[in-house]
Length: 470
Image (cartoon, rainbow, N blue to C red; front, side, top):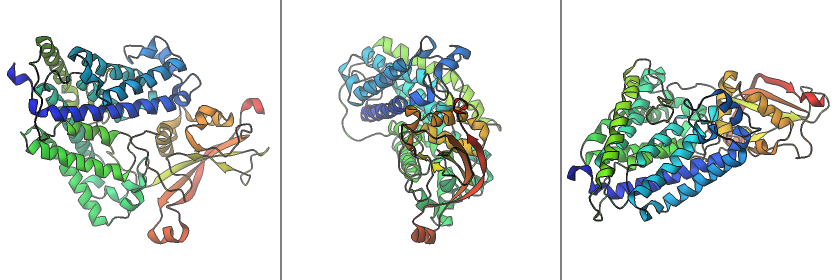
């Protein structure tokens, strides 16, 4: 079928596939370096305990059959290796069916991780990577030109990401309709970046322009993705520019980067394309069957988008084939942070020698400037932001986290920037206190060198010690 392929998008496919492989690599690296403390056999929410109560049909995963920390590490590092190979172009060295199987490997491995990842893997970008990765399996390699229907599925996914995010804002917090959300967002977002302080202090009229431009990009521009080139290319370029602006303003894991990757699949790059053979019949049948399935399953996110009770970041099937997306339907006006402290004192006095644990990404010491971590995802730091909003977000893991600090657990301490206690002398007590944080003004920054000012609010967790030590 001559209409089946789009040779002009051969460069777009190449760029898309290599960039997607890099995002996969970051995701697997994040899992490999953090899983033991979060999900391991002695983790904060252990996988073995999870699979005992959740059946395979609800959470398909290789770890439903067997789990060990060594097996999880093997899967995560294998995912890193396969992703690196795909980024280097290994799929182009294989026959078409072999390339498809190679792209299937990271999808299966990452699906296995996400489906047992519990609260640590409950973010929209996990499902977005899986949905994108599944579609990428059928994009082909150098043997055939990119299939038109697969390119359409990628555009349809990008449309749902952007348009869904735009709708959730307009239906959510009134500050999006009043164009005032960015008066607060850069200060209260989950994990500020090194430039967030400066973004916050931009003139308020410019914040209004930013919000209005965001509404245009998310509510109008997505429809232009289905218009022929060069309009569709211009629409994708505008989305890429918007996402890069967000990259500069905060740490949002790989959410912005995977959206950029999707937009790259829309861009029609100049230049000649190599000659390719006609697509084999079996490939056409498989691709069309998958396209029909995904279009059929799309009725659920479409119904969600047009609903007045629209929800964001939800999977409609256990394989994460088709999902709904969105972010920041509501924006916090005040930033709260949990400060975790320990003491070696025999008696836990309020005015005792309490020493603060330092996290890698979340605000702590008011004088420590935020760093750039995205697309790498600091899972504990993100969950600490939610825990500060409400203790209910931390009910399943915070108590165990404190227990691991009292044990000076090495895996847990690796998630932190610094522990105030030597490895052979754990604290006797650990406590947590809630503080209100706000950005300093230009004058305060010059006078104190601090980018944050914090005010004590209340006790979050009273001084706690191990039962066995008392």
